[in-house]
Image (tube, rainbow, N blue to C red; front, side, top):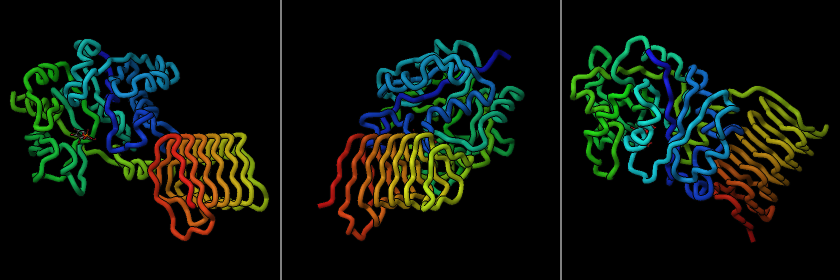
Length: 358
Ligand code: G1P
């Protein structure tokens, strides 16, 4: 069989993550200090796939600026533009010329999988079905594609976001295809939401009698399309991070648990409760940070408590002793409390927002 390629879909506007995504593609939002797309590329490379096309649209320049030619990952990265947001089937079709007649993986750039895709790719190559899906039991399947599976493990039916799901098996955002998926895409119509659904193309393969295999995914899986899921992913990655302190923590401070503290960062009279990721060149004074906090580079925090949060580069947080919790902040955000407030704040703020309690 020919070498596999990968097509990473990162054209979406990330509407459920607004306002964070007004000035940044959702695929570059960080969890535990690393952009989602960087983690996705690591996962693909770990499965031995080096030829990768990124399907870009919304904020394409930022994605290209981050990944470049892929050499930082040891990959050969090409770019394909999806001019209009017409669905995942349409996005895959944009990469048709790039893929040619190679087998390929489609990876939704906002999906995070603990187990990686190495075993999935290996069994696709060994068994040679027409297409392969990963599925995962979930509590509320209505927000996903849902699969019904036959006794032999192959797909019987797949339905996109059904109001009354027949099973609890969500379709994970990683698929393996060969070029027959393009024939399937040619034969589908837009769905009720006006999109060419990859799920409908997979159903077309099934209806044409082609085997579509399934693997039940082990380990955690997050589709980080909304703030709560992004925070959940941040907690999962922080729980698995190594301990590495490069900055300085003064003697009066207390620091416990797994921590990463970057170079040039100075911590004075603080309590840091791991796991936390604190970037480079931050200054923290009289603060309680953690657990599950990611702070970008160049942040300043004074007289405040922060828990379960993603704070991006160059933010300033002052006088919030009651705390900032379950929050996601863009870059260069300033939040200044009045030091007396008794209630914690829960904030989702885009780049350069300014909040002052008066
Ligand atoms: C997409 C797919 C859906 C799949 C999900 C996984 O949905 O359409 O079938 O279950 O990704 O992340 P979206 O998250 O784009 O709404």
